[in-house]
Image (cartoon, rainbow, N blue to C red; front, side):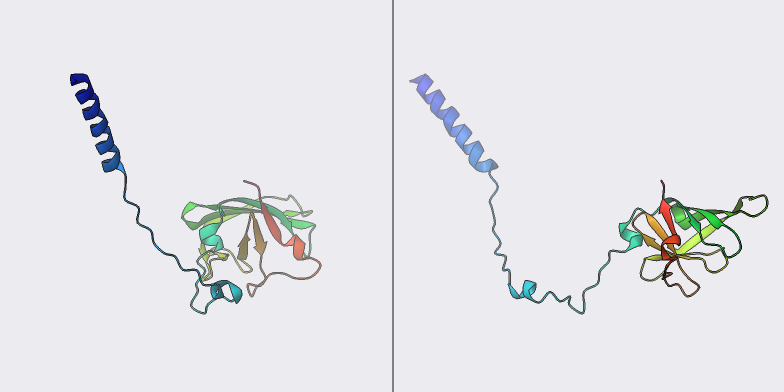
Length: 158
């Protein structure tokens, strides 16, 4: 009898623990309106906060050879670092001793968060930041178009 009472007490204690440990589930009714998906239009008050500045891993080293009017090309290396710092190295290919010209400083982002300006450089000094690429922009901050457009890009190497 004692054993049965002890077993009953044990079962009762376990049942009490199981009931007390369960979290009450509150359900919330989510109403999905089909009209939200039918128009495909973006509301006027929608603000997309995803920019190159906030969404891309833009820091690193970018390399490429930009077109040059009086040489074979301008080998360009730009390293974007923390604190909006940069180091830029250029070599004018096919000219004299081909020494490395190094400069550096800080860069700033445009309001849209997709273009940087190298503050200590002479214009054109703006680059559109893409996924693992910098696009060298013209004097007005526009992408270069035409048959040479593909030559105005620096690929991220690390």
